[in-house]
Length: 102
Image 1: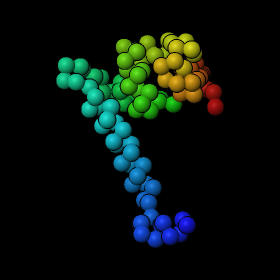
Image 2: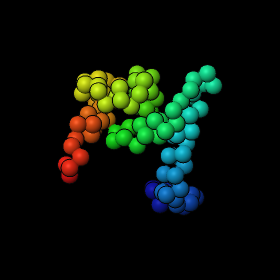
Image 3: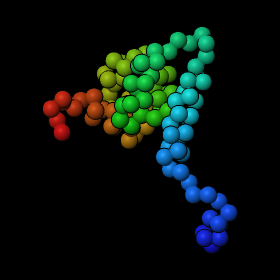
């Protein structure tokens, strides 16, 4: 069944799909900011690079926090509430991990 379905379609270019998905995601986050809202692009880019953070939970984090500093001081439960259970745990662990830890 799968062979017959695939015959009429080209193979997926995974690298291209990932590239498009990443760019669209950031652009989606940017497009939802109105002209009246100012956004610190550096902080937004930094937020999107934190463990567990994606465009979907970044939007909520930006609504709940005024800064990265505020985010780092949140409790585990608060991080899980705004970022989701797994992402919140990843953030909590990351913010409390010592620099020398491997």
